[in-house]
Image (cartoon, protein in one colour):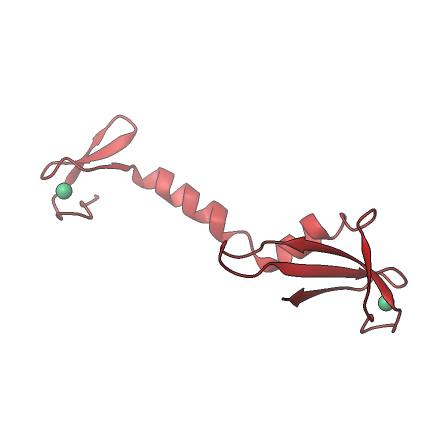
Amino acid sequence: MQFCEACGSMMHADGEAMVCSGCGRREPRDEERAAAFVSTEARTEGDVIETEEGAAFEGKPTTETTCERCGHGRAWYTIKQTGAADEPPTRFFKCRDCGHRWREYS
Ligand SMILES: [Zn+2]
Ligand SMILES: [Zn+2]
């Protein structure tokens, strides 16, 4: 059972959409909205750094920074927009000596 967000009337299925019997508003059916919700919520910060960023450092530019684990002075870095567009991007580092990875919020 689904109710219109605009007027609260009961909605009925019409093909791929739900249609409000009161105001005519159309919305995606419940199961499609649930699927979209899961796919965005499943992307945790841990997944981002381990899967996407973890393997992609080699070949990236390096910068002078100090590894907090081994004290080495150079690390690969990459910049990624992890949050909303109006938030500052996050810089990811990987130590060239020991492979330690960390991130820095600018
Ligand atoms: Zn309505
Ligand atoms: Zn290191």
